[in-house]
Amino acid sequence: MPDAHILGIESSCDETGAAVVRSGEKILSNVVFSQIATHQPYGGVVPELASREHLRAIVPVVRQALKDAGLTYRSLDALAVTQGPGLAGALLVGISYAKALAFALEKPLIAVNHLEGHIHAVLLEERQKGNHEVNFPVLALVVSGGHTHLYLAEQKSEGWSYRNIGHTRDDAAGEAFDKVAKLLGLGYPGGPIIDRLSTHGDASSVKFVTAQIKHQDRKDRHDAEGRPRFDFSYSGIKTAVLRYVETHNLKASTEQRRRTLSAITKPTLDDYLAACDLETLNLVASFQRAVVEDLIEKTLAAARTYDAATLFVTGGVAANNELRQRFESDAAQDGLPVFFPSRPLSTDNAAMIAAAAYPKWLSRDFAALDFSAEASLPLQKL
Ligand code: KG4
Ligand code: ZN
Image (cartoon, rainbow, N blue to C red; front, side, top):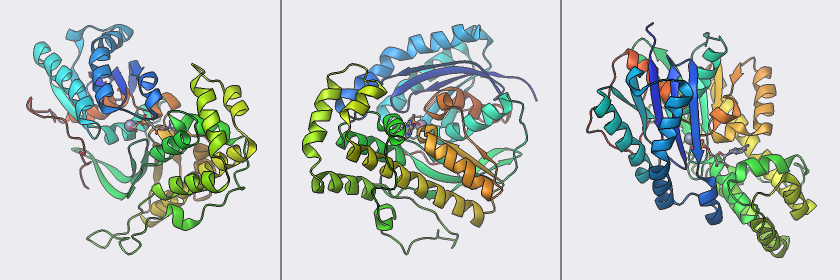
């Protein structure tokens, strides 16, 4: 297959990314400018601020990606950019810049679905390690701050195709991590800190009942063609954590923690631990355990039902240590190989966008210059 150097651009949420990837299998550069510091005081991503920060960062980030790759703009074969899903204003910054650059350089432009990018992050790294063998069908759990999706993925001659067999009915799993961290005064983003604190608490101390993490709409467990679906729901568990704080008189200590931690520019693990009593650590560990178990239970049930040959777990929450360990051990019991991206490639980045663009480059699937951002862009069906 011919080689291609593709410049990927990602700006769907709060990370401005640019990367050069050769032929979907070799990362030549991968630059990510994170806006976490900008959004931290608000406890979540503020869309207007995200667009403004992308505008500021996009030119230097792209320049750095070219420089790190040791390439000139002219030597690129194509550009790729995230079309959606994501924040419309944030997406538009990347798309407008990519269009202008592609036009000026007279290079083809490829529109990529962000979720497809997360799936290709796994493939990219496996190929980079020399593993070109993936058995189909692949079941991909894409689990991040904005998404909790299960896709059956297959490589067909004309490219990749995906069928959604499950999604969250309300909050995404990463969103639950972020909201629980916020309500416990732990700051933003919640996933990484809850991940680290959980090992210091007793995960069996707070029992979340099944109804809190099962969507209410129990009848609708099949799609229109009668095929089983495996949907998720994480807003109930967030409310259960809030109730626990209220009924166990943890409000005052939570406020104290919020004040203490927000006065520290970059809190260390010791700062977090000093600000947390054992009851809070137990609550955090129990919350994480409940979410991890639910993700694993549904994903493995879906894998059995659909006879998946391989499992991918990707997206920001795939960086979670307990999730990785449990998936590895539980999938192994089912004889199912499971692959994760490395932690830097689990969260948003542009290398995954450039990698997902390669099969489209091979099939000349280029974007028309009038394409635009699509905040709720679905992945195509099988
Ligand atoms: O993929 P990503 O960078 O952006 C979206 O597409 O949403 O994912 C960010 C999400 C945030 O909700 C963050 O809290 C979560 O991933 N996250 C984690 C961990 N690292 C990031 N959740 C649990 N454990 C982690 N170690
Ligand atoms: Zn993402």
